[in-house]
Length: 194
Image (tube, rainbow, N blue to C red; front, top):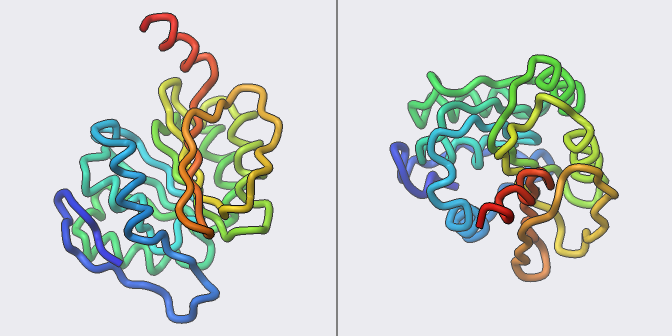
């Protein structure tokens, strides 16, 4: 697993021993994700939940994101090592602990992240729980924020949301799909201006 482009281009990331701990985003899925985001990554405040190796947040930092908070109970030490390897440690903060408690903490602090990556283990209902919590939170995601969820190809049961709206979805073979969400009010305002 490596950083595709930007300041840390080509840097190989450390991965955990034992496949049970993480399921890294495939390089082709990551490349497609960042092609979809394009220039929108630069200057954004990133939150990477269920971060695993820190792969997605580190790629965003390498491409010019302003800062990133990484949250993962099992791999926090590994993420810190990968921040050092990529020489991006000045821009990253690692939180070890429960993702949902950290979401509440960040919302209470009015963090207003403009790019959120959510890549939990598949088939455990975690991405749906995170979506509901983000949808109900004030101060967690910026007005122009983008939430990217990686989930299983057969996991199509998006929970009922009051403020977030699915704006893009892409499938990758029989295993993975990416769903992009934004605030409904922001999408509607952008459509009116167009």
